[in-house]
Image (cartoon, rainbow, N blue to C red; front, top):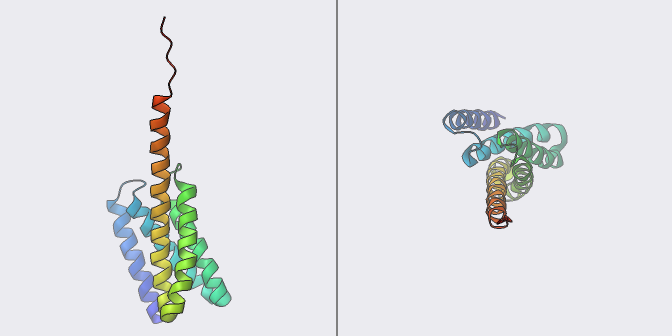
Length: 141
């Protein structure tokens, strides 16, 4: 339990440092918030419901952290990526490295998933803006 508190406090410290220096909707900030939420969700879920609760907590925490740090336009994709990455990361980490591996896996998975979801959303918006530009109908009199 002492290691869990050390992990959680270090994640809080890193998250606060990134949150101060990053601008709004930065992919780094979304990833850090999702990782922090996933670790917190994993710890709460493990205490409440064992390994299944930890997996669900990792997914919900990763989604919540990504959604809070994302822009309104990119929120859904970031939350979905954080949830999938957090849950899968916990499961893989738990199988490879025990409880501590589960915490590390949930943090890395949620961070990667949220960053990927955020990037996909931004790319879709850029492609949509480009295609809208060339489809303008012009009237010449």
